[in-house]
Length: 240
Length: 59
Image (tube, rainbow over all chains, first blue to last red; front, top):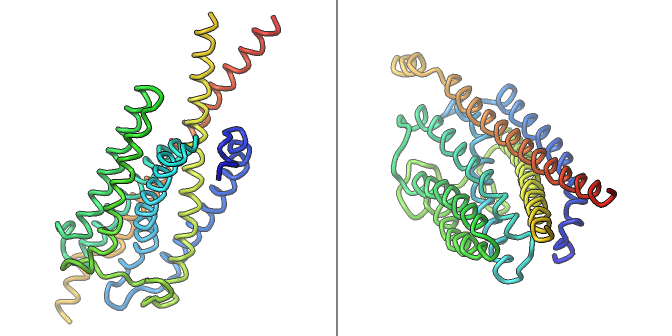
């Protein structure tokens, strides 16, 4: 892991990985969504609205997966002081927030014809909304810590770890509390979903995951470049 | 049966599908564009500073 602690080595890898992830992710996600929406079957109960699945579910999983990655990066920052861990966590915050917001909005749009309401304050929807607020709070906190100078990454890292408690709450909310939201259709090695829905869903999820990775790499490169430019300016100011 | 017909007339399901994808794809597109522009701007600023440094040393 510390092999990539050198930002120069990381940048060399990120330069060719970024377009690869963006291109393959874009093709897979758009292809799977296009197939699911235009060629896939409608559901016997939900009709055509089931086609929102190919966008809603990947963004939900990546919203949760993003915070899991942010928490792992925070732990790495606190325990091993990996120089790229704080940058990775900061780079995940905004895409995670956008994916959580898309999940909430598409879920609300899906809920209107499926449940007869745009929103209910039940466990799943509320805990997902809390995740969006956690992302926004983390982004604000990390920006403020960055402005305050070196050593300021510990507070966001602790926040990132504490916020991870919300991930199992989101996952188990549909089992712990009564909810309009359905229980999970896909569990480890098992699926209650027909292959006609499952295959485009998994391909779309893979595509969105690659896109998410590409976006995080672009944001990491931006943060690293800003740090390098500021470090150069500081050195110049000291030398003058 | 009559109720089913009324429900279909009142809610065109495709409107919801289109709205969801417009928001989702628009949001993703904006995120990709913003991330790419931020990366380009930051890397250009860093490289410009590096070039100025090299010129200063040469002079």
